Length: 296
Image (tube, rainbow, N blue to C red; front, side, top):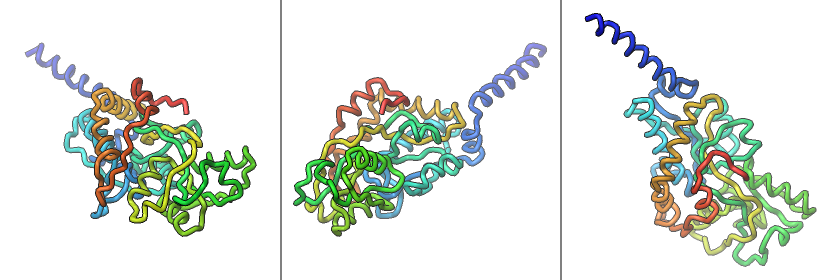
């Protein structure tokens, strides 16, 4: 009886230590809420967009679902729920920094400026900005757009890269800003802009989803190379560790490769569009040694 009585305090101490190790502002609110809140945009096919029933779907959403499962296992809450919070390109940052969502699941670039406001996990995609232009356009790159109207989306890195290139090369571009990727491409379709600067994967997806897809083409060299990663709050190192470890597991096990094929190489909703975008060499190389540290 004496040995057993000593075992109970020891067991209680071990349980307390285990719970303390998994404590943190984000983890605490997840445990209290019983759910993980995923912030997502609604028009960034194939990363995060809405299906016919207005439910969020996409490559980023599928990967984030795996992250929620891993968080539930670590917290010993297998019934952990997933909640979705739609955000705009501008609003996605404050949604994370103000604690309204736990993970931002979309196509956000991890760069030095943004790391001042948020943390980022291991990249799930590597891309760069190019241009969508009318199929009849003779433009082959940014130099061919001198003096023309070029649109991009508010709060995005392609917009910043476009403005920087315009200033450095003295191109005299009229830089326009749209509220969403879909609206920006609509401006090109309506003749309100001569080109749309955005990550090339987003351009291919937007064009493929349109009934008039043959009216557009993607052109130009990369304005920049960008690593896309899920945004996390900065104030919970343990939460970030759980997410980072699951991202590495998905990569090393190649499970994420199957998720990639589903969204980039196979028919996807709503019209069974096929993007025909096999994994590029930049992403393959980065995933050889997956890290949250990016050189771009």
